[in-house]
Length: 193
Image: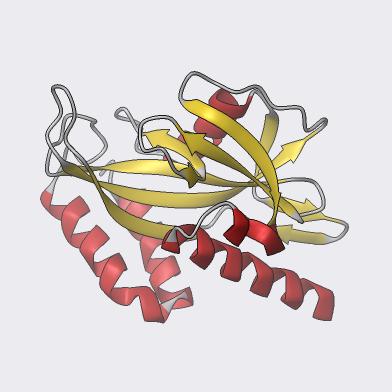
């Protein structure tokens, strides 16, 4: 039963992004076959939650120069048994940035709710006592509220507010570029309203 919520959110996501159906199907199979999918020591893989953390105008995203992976990525981390992946993404955004954040995105009379924004499966290389495994990463839109002065946590080399139109100058990571494109499309749809 603890997996039902995420399966329902994935069904909505699959409907919205039909071109990503094979990845969503992989998530569904993984979640259905692995009751411990939210646990870090599920070595087939585990669910992680990430945040596409945007500023108040929606023009910048906060990226982390990830210490272990040595790449610019979105903020996020392990579920550690929490089946509420949106909550995981929110918690990780706060912990890794020191910012006050809220779920979703609001600007004037526009509101983007906390449905899944993106999904990605990626392999994490073996290190120390951990075998190579997969992160089944579920990403949500999160917005900073108040000031934008972040604190770099011990999980990062650095953090940076990056203009969404200029993300390619920080990373060529396919999933980041996919989220950039999705965000730009949403921004255009909002302008047209």
